[in-house]
Length: 426
Image 1 (tube, helix red, strand yellow):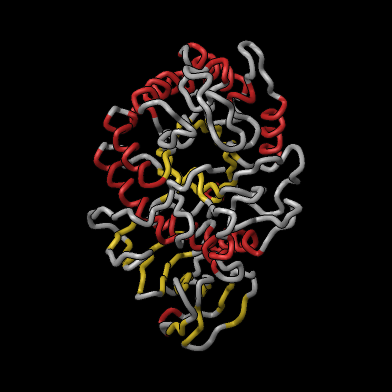
Image 2 (cartoon, rainbow, N blue to C red):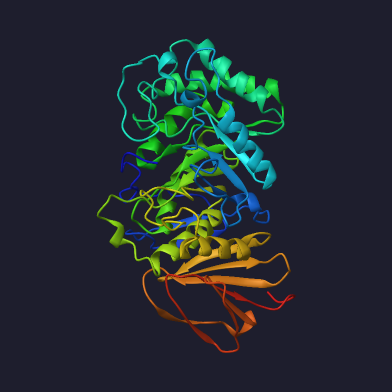
């Protein structure tokens, strides 16, 4: 859950990049050329990640599929697991690990949120839920951090394989220290995690928004790339359409290249569409909300993001694209769009993705070998001319409905449609 709107990306300029595979033009509120490259591998189930807050208490296990779960705002921050020096509370995390194993979902454990007793600034105030006084500060004694990381990793050896160093370190409400202090924490945690289990993978601290780009550049300049196997970031764009994420993704990838870490996977470890209390009406629940949900995952993969953890399944009012009804159990139309886009993408290889005026066309080869094109219009309803050589036979909609297709034109809008051809045709 966020306590600030600093993640708004509307003013971010996109850096130019080299010759890559995919092209977007005129996205968001700017007319710019942005070249993208998707991973060459098929889309894995783990690309579709989730956050859940109360799954061991009041929230039933989600009725929608997902492949990975980020443990943040899920009652297992450091401050919640070690409320006093020498005292550990494992009940919550034990149960969450058991649930993940039962449902074949892998876990990303986010480290941090310092207990008051261990904080370098124990009386430092914070805002928002789950925020313990002093929790944004680095530990006063680095040995307390070492002990926390080692104890956690040892207890869940072979059960949790991914560890993220910190959440949104560029925001003072989450980290009030300097990039130099964060480097110190990463430098200590990285070898401990590898010593406990060499298969552990470490995700860099995940910054957010335009100021996060500056923070990340400084962190990399200090040598942060040495203490990460995976690069994490949060691509929030608030009330802007999902294509606007490119205004953060591409500059970040340029920074990764600058510091020689562009060979590491890039993960979006947290993104949703957040609102203030009177802004809910600004995102149309019938078209924008489910359409933006699906487009966010499509665009992120096209841009080279290899995991995307949605925030959040059972959010309690901050998410303007809710996945559950008020019972925190019944899936909304948006959640059903999340399910459908998984069906379209999982196992598929994305070959191209480009904007054609306001229309976007992404070409895939599905696991079945059939060619498919996901198409939408970013702002309105429009007639889309379907090339005859596509050989389209079936049209799939985000509702899950499918219909035979034999014409040469189809109406599209902000809700993506998948047009599927016959195996053996390109």
